[in-house]
Image (cartoon, rainbow, N blue to C red; front, side, top):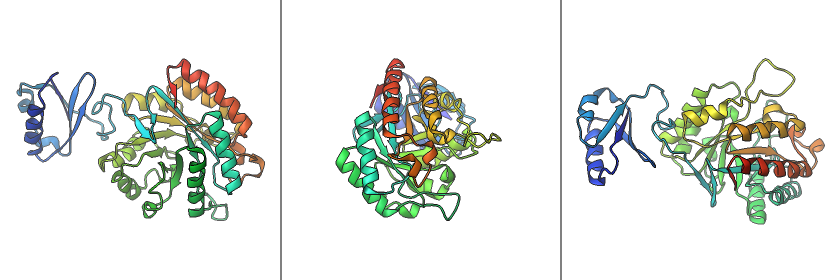
Length: 337
């Protein structure tokens, strides 16, 4: 349920109404937008009388929300959410590019790629220290050593770092990571999502391999319900019956996320197709669909990559892509961050 207040309602009256509603056993999510001030009622609202609310002079309207996701819902929070990452803004009106290797392999490899993507205009450095792999015999990442190398790359380049967490038990190790990534395989790791909700750390939440939009929104709801509003959603393709590409990029997810939620959305075209030459056309499509950014895999020698070399761009290819991305993003009215 949401309660829309009349314009220019005094703060004292708002606080008084919030206290009265909270006495009914529900919690309040307060949102003051450009055009509306909204009280979002979270919990069992069956004991809250709509007629009582409508009779209050500062109340303009009362609406029931049928969707199970409340805090993520744009009707709870009409204005777009913007995430601050080390002074860089991610959200509507801006365009971010997170780039780097799928996995951290060595200091020379990571620093070389980090310096290259920074020179090309990347917003953040992505790199996997811990790698969840389908096979237990595949390279699993350098783990804590990889985290240390990412921190060193940040010191050298100044780029904020994005890396994937595996478990809530690792939160202390990720304390100085700038954006914590929740991978597709962990999208419904609810214990992890709950713990991330207790942090104010920006979270990049990737859509699961076969997850519906509602399931993605509900996973984000877990984080917001814990008090952390700093969530970025990521469309990275879903598994279908098609075998010629790794995943099918669900480009319709971008405008749908924009319509249904207030959270920023970025697109990962590297994982979507799993083929390097398809990254550029899919990136262009993501920009046209309204995405707030891209996540691109870049490797200095893709043929020798220990993980996902087939979908990785070389630094020169990434530089060429960034020139096109910058032009298209600016055409769409988005400032490159």
